[in-house]
Image (cartoon, rainbow, N blue to C red; front, top):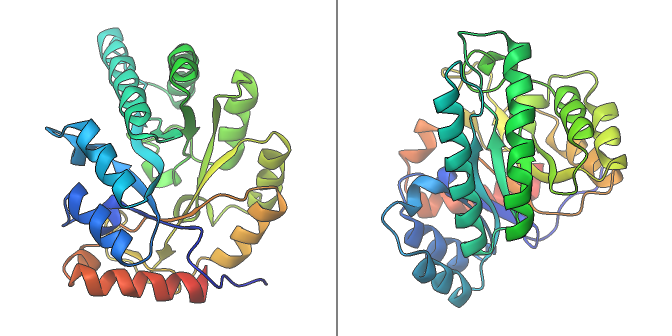
Length: 275
């Protein structure tokens, strides 16, 4: 398998270094030779987006994505309308920062069937396409692990994400593939090929699944700390035509408690050795 020998396609999510502000993420990522950044929206609250964009430009940082939109399903129609309003705001924020896409955690409502939630997801994404197109921002559906089907995502496989993308059939809608959520699927390679044929692969997120894991949300590992065949999955994506950033997205109380500058160097080592 082909190894990675430089950081030209390394992107780090701001949530990976959760203790840092957006300004700290930009300055420290840049100083570490990392030019790709995916920005989580909560760090933008109360910020002047023009100032953040200027800082990104000054540090020659490329915004790979804005995270996150979605959460379309709800029994209450008013909640669904509010979700659309928030997603339009996310698209506006992405455009202001020069982000080419918004990652969608599509949501689920445990008070209704998964089938109805999926229908609402498709309807919600379709409603956003004109606004996304007008702003030059794509929408990346991120299927989550089945353990999140109750409240975070009614889409729990790449096959389901492919189904909804093919049904919507828009150049402005694609898929974010996250190894943490999809590594277990024995149809993963075939679905990546399918996704590639449709030119729907918009993003690739990497981390690792620790064994044993002590928390299904905040005990992710750095690449090489767990059992996910990350390099193999990356090669499948590249064979399917993906040539974008490899985005390190790690949620870990253990790693957030460390010195974040030293942690960033560990991220770089792990990236080269196991991605």
